[in-house]
Image 1 (cartoon, rainbow, N blue to C red):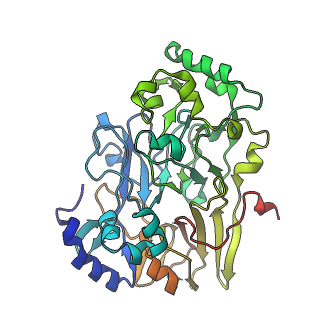
Image 2 (tube, one colour):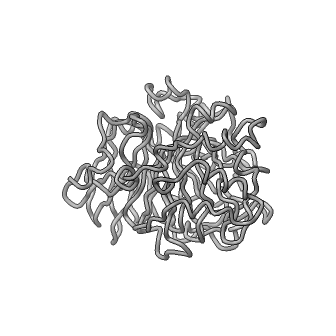
Length: 413
C-alpha cells in the first residue's frame, strides 16, 4: 500500500529540495516490505500479524524489510515498487531512487554517483522461522552474463531483533574441506529425488547475537533462523543449490534463475559459478566471522563497527551500531551517506524524531528509518536520546566511505 500522493520522475525536484532543506540533508523513509514465495516469515520484524501475507498468499509471506534501497526485488509477480524505498515529506511520497537520480552528488556523494550512477548498496532485515536453502550469490562477472550485478553480503544478528531463536539458529556455510566437485555434481544430479544431500557436504555454525559474518560472492550459505541485518551490494541475484528444505521443494528454476538460459542444464557451468577455494577454505570462520569493534565513543555513547573488512580487496559496504544512553547526545560525522534504522528507544537525529515501533501495519509510516545524505554526514549530525532506555541504531555505508576499515579478525586485537 503506497500513498496516492506519490510524486514520480521529473516532478520530484521541488519536493526533494524542500525535504532536504527541512531535514538539513536527512530524509525520512517509509517501511519497505518484501515477500518471498519460498520462505516462512519469522514474525520478528514488527509487521502486524494481519499483514504477513499483505501481497496475497500466492506471493508468500513478508519476511524482509529493506532499508535505503534503490534495488528492485527480483520476485516473480512483483508490484512495480517492490524493494524500493520511498521518502516521506509533508504527506507525499517519492522514490529514493528518483531523488538520487535528481540530486545524486548531494545525496550519495560525487565519488559514488559518478562511478555507479546510483546508490549501489542496500540493507535489510531478513527474518525466517527456519533455515533457507543452501545457496550462493553470483560474482560480478557471472551476474553480468545475464545483465545483473554480483552480490557480496554481510550479516549482523542484532540482539534487539532476536528475542527468540525460532526453529534453527545455525547457518551452514561453504563446503567441508576436501569436498570434490564430483560430490557436488552428484547432489545436482539427485535434485528430483527429494533431499539432494548437499548439507552433508557442509558445516553448520551456531549463530550468536551481537556478531556477524562477511560472505563473498560464490560462497554457499544456508542462513539460519536468527533475524539478520544484512548490508549488501545492490543486487538480488542468487542460485539455490539445495532441493528440499524442511520438507518444502525448491524448484530447479531457483537454482538457475540468474544463469544464461542455454546453461540451465550444464552442471559444470553451474558448479563453476562457485568460488571453490573460498567454499572449501580450511579456516572459513577465521576469514569470515565478525565481532563488533569500537570505532568512536564519548560520554554516554559508543559507535561500533559491526560490518567491516574487504571483499576481494575492495571496501564495498560497512556498517556501525550506535548506542546512546538516556539523556546523552553525540554528533556523528561520517565519510559518506548511510541508511539508518532505529532498533531500540526514542530520540532524534538532527531535526527528525526517532521512535522504535512495537507493531507496524502494512502501509503505515514510521519514525525509525532515515537516509543520511552525503552532505549531512560530512557536516555531522547530532543524535540525542530523549527516552528512558538506550537509543540503538544500525547504519550502513556504501563503497569506499572510509579511508580505512578494520580487517576481518581484528576484533581479536
